[in-house]
Image 1: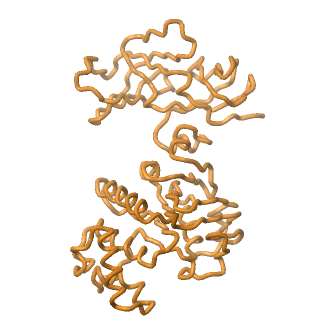
Image 2: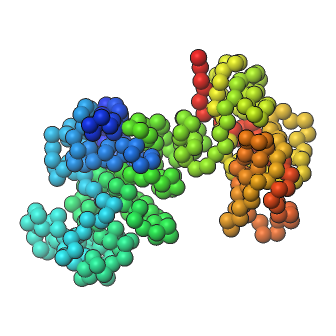
Image 3: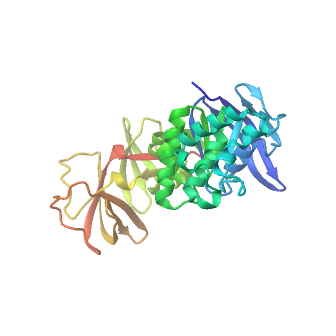
Length: 370
């Protein structure tokens, strides 16, 4: 497999009194599409710039294939960066923008021509070689920047929010193209983004960052289905989050007394003590909504609550409902429109409904031991 392994050990960085990174350690695998995900100011771009060589950490080390690269300048790290603002040369054609790294190395013209054409073909810009950057769309400019970053055949490609300047449809299209390029060339990609859907769509693994810390590293499935902290649960997609107390356990099923809600059952293979305070998350798509009370047939693993629809929102492929269970508790429920012939009547504003879910569809995010 192409690409390189990246070792980040104990990286800390402060700008004056602001701590951008706090003792961050990560191992990124060879050929992996790895995302650094978090809100603005969480430290993800600072970490990327340290890997690239544009910033020096206050503490810690960065290795590429086991070699400490902190003493090396950016051009000797076998890692190239694609920036948010493209950073193309406006006075050079598409061909010459992509050729620029090879020109710096005095590469033979015949080799330059062959390689530039290869990489323009890779990013589907072969017919645009003679154009100037001002003649290109945002998506085309970004592809030029990617081709230029790849032409030196780096072991690692660093992408700093490369799609944030594009509109939503083009951003999604470019994301799929990036994923396809990664599959074709097989090098290590490190992708910085604040967009959860982007990270979930293309990443092999994700590091969720907040206030200079890495809160969780895992596959998209792990991050979404088994969030390590309240912040991760709420930042990745939408969820219903509650605090409660463990009242009883029955094997791997726990009975919780949830604040302002009452009895809730949840399954978990971890051990919690009676009396322990915990956080519970339930994703909106795991919930069922119906005007009729569900038939649970005596099952003890089904949670059922009754409430009033505060607001129904139709968005084509699904409907989103905000269901008020009490003056202070509102559930978010997503209902997928998978069958045009579905004969259930539309759920309306102010309608009384039942919300239900299985114990296995809830997840205890954090325990709060004294």
